[in-house]
Length: 123
Image 1 (cartoon, one colour):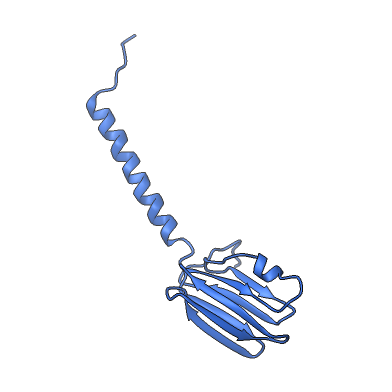
Image 2 (tube, helix red, strand yellow; image 1 turned 45 degrees about the vertical axis):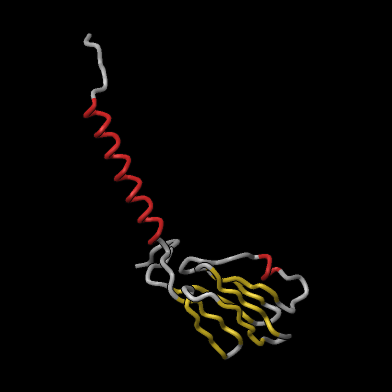
């Protein structure tokens, strides 16, 4: 049997492959669930805000004002007048198709974008 050794070009080939894999992985991760707009539904009113612009918005609901924070490409309930604050505890949303809601206050937020994260397909 021959003695197998790695040569310089073997290392170069592996390094190039790993670099290409890293570029593809980072690009796919950056573009997956690409988001553009957060929609806030409060009764019959719908508000639309860009996730690219940070801001804090007070939205009137059934039992008071909910505070929605958009920061760093994410949206979340920062505060709400509901009793158990489960909407605030639900955390940040950042990908197309994600949503959060404060049911007692009648306010929901959802993210729409150019790509959707699909669970299934229908024909």
